[in-house]
Length: 469
Image (cartoon, rainbow, N blue to C red; front, side, top):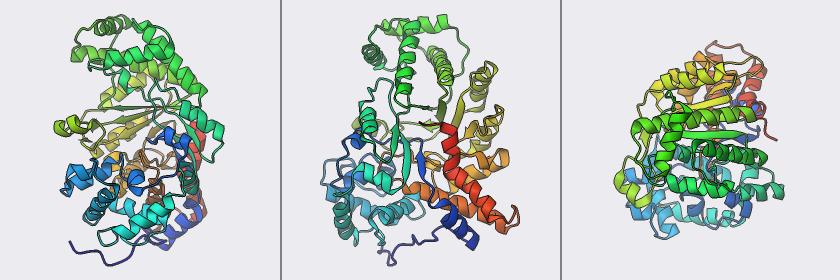
């Protein structure tokens, strides 16, 4: 492919297709702070706050979005996740970028180069060396905390296992940096009772809480202790990554027998997994409600499709895709039970299959609560839907089935400290969407009113919803 001749298309009015959209973005959305309430950033890196010495480390390490793009472009794995030089790996990404045209990676790449490094040139082979040198020079003077502050990130919520000691969060809290960093409890490993490493994980949890876990009662006491510990350290959210919610009928005696069987070395059937996991999920949801936490459910991913790369690289390395699981019945069953017991927390569901957007949006409208605006949220476009088309579809469905004005907005879901221009991307798309309605006569011609709604979606709704310290 021939090189791209023009400089960046990331102008002041990128994605803004009318004067009204420009006004809504520049006068209302642009300067709003960021609350990034779900990501996979490393609290260790923030606590240690060391400068980045190389853009490859800051930009490519752990970014399976880019890895998928490079693999699709035929790049050898050694240049993606291997031990080849950082510069060569960057060059391979630069070779790939022009081929990502119309993929969100193209927009994200140029936005990040512009915002963090003031680079206008399109990343491609003939610009790679200059960009590599300039970016590395700037990163040599930037710490994670500085990068977050430059993007006006007020709050981030990391994703943390129940057995994490949260020492890095504690260190961050003592440093008084601009960005508040809170943990999020992600208890996925508690559910996979049929996996080989389950008993090893329970042993680690036992060590963490200081007593042996030999029964369901022991396990629930251990989980409750960890919920309390996380709460003391500022946690106000939980999260799950599941194919579907677990909502099977169970008794505690049945779940107890299944757990004891597994701890004794027995094998577990699929039915037993579902019964046990349904018990654990229900009990966790009750604990969260008692603490006033928000619970998040990321549903619909079909993970680890490539067994060859799974064996070579492990999970979360770019071999997941959209699943076609049924979701409505389990959501209805779990949420209805909790609601009927006055134990349903504020809840955000994220859908990965766009054919089920209406399913999710209408389900969340079933369980409102007086005095709690937007209690049940149909979350922002997630993962493969975290792009212009996916975000527009999510917001259009939410507008049709619920209240866009109460939406808590965007998150990065990222492992990279250079990903925060995604909030700008979302905000520009939101402003253009609302301006298009205005110009079609579908909403009142009141830019101040519309601008306030946009500010709420960008920031204010999240402030009121999560109640961070």
